Length: 255
Length: 158
Length: 61
Image (tube, rainbow over all chains, first blue to last red; front, side):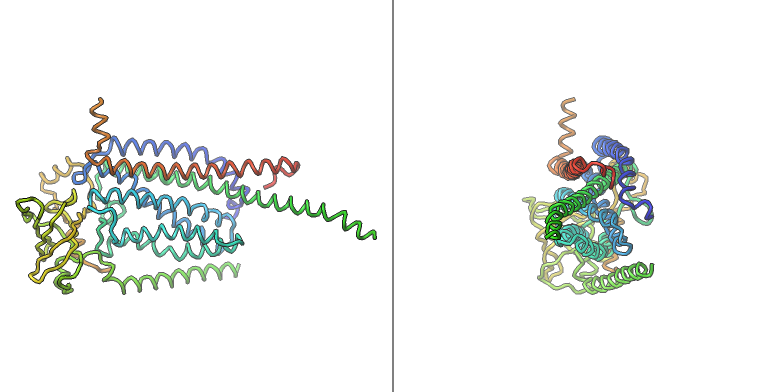
């Protein structure tokens, strides 16, 4: 693992993968959008409003999956102290936060016409809002320290503590009476969603996942370059300091 | 290696402790995490009268009656075992219909009826095109609101 | 044709909910992409400028 997790190697490998990933993302998102808006049928109960599902559900899945990768990267960073893991965790957080916000907003826009409310404090909606605040808390905590390393460690611990929210989100609809309906896709006994709706949903979900991978790689590359920049500037400042101090020292020793 | 092993165990035991603590807290707060009572829970848990609470279940078939001015709706909420008669004045959500899940917020009156101040529609986990729903109903493979009724009747048991 | 476009845009009466949901999603994703690309380009330009001033170490990570 360490062989591939070296920043130089990562820069080289990600430069090779990124263009292909970007093209695949664009194709899948385009296909997903066409399927969701033009091909997928209306629902027997919800009519055309069911099309909100094709952005709401992939955003919700990705919000949880991004948090899981944030937590796994944090664990690797804490235990094996790998710098790339810290970078991955810190760059996954803003992406996850944006998708959580998309999930909450699109869900609200779906809830109003169908349920009759923009928002209710049921266990599913509340645990998803908690996830959003976990992301914001993590980002704020990492940036609150002057010492980069201490900020990363504090953030990693918060990320691991927050992992308890993931099973609560997933099973809230089974454990408690919620207004939100139970799972339709990942459930025992198979999906309860017609294939003509499931297929567009899965294409869209795959497109969202590849989008996450593309943006994560891009952000990690930017973060590695930014760290390199700081190292170069530090080295330059040190060299300049030596140059400035050198002659004076020499003069002093002459006297 | 041993330091890494140590940190690994520290992280794992921290997560385990956190999981246990969360499970305990959640089961302790179980009753307040319930978004609504089913008609059966309303009876067995002896819900208070004239206090704001929510009930949920299916709108019973042929139970919806509208007043002459069309503003007030009476309907029966059922979980398959018990029923509650609900009175509501106001606009209903698009998904409100007989056989569908519903969550009503309001107060339980001493005569056992429920006066709702808001009605939310709850839909089940089934999604399908209208033709498929029609075909299922025609062939007799349709289970009316089976999923929602099951969830409501099962009650709160983590 | 025009009627079909209008019909599509109406979204069965749910236009006021479906289109904002898609707009929010598109805005969020476009914003992420824009922000990430900008950070990447800035960092790359700055590193290139620094390395240009320090020849001989250009290929070091």
